[in-house]
Length: 126
Image 1 (spheres, rainbow, N blue to C red):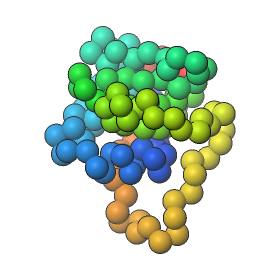
Image 2 (cartoon, helix red, strand yellow):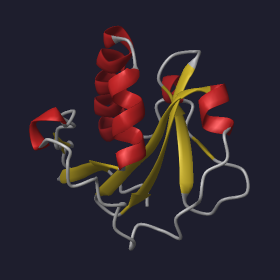
Image 3 (spheres, helix red, strand yellow):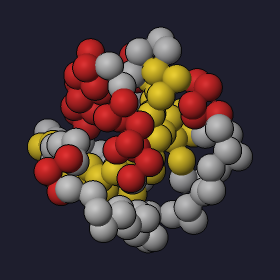
């Protein structure tokens, strides 16, 4: 089973600003999430007041928020608790496409978020 990992422009911007070690840890935690969404070290929980937005721990100080629907995982925001507490317009759900990036952005500047191969038999967390 293959899960598609996508990200919003907000996630991309915040991710690029992180220290390299936190970015590496993020890749490791995403791979772990795709293997076992219920792994205790991820501390996955629903964001209070939302129906579709979840958060998971990267380190004790860094978290990311995401939406999961079927085989698609959309990464929304990443940072410390303070960054994640900042108000932001909420999307109604995954049916809405991410906000388009500015036309002046170079496609080579994108941070690579790989598509992960999940083990067969992994239950969908949607």
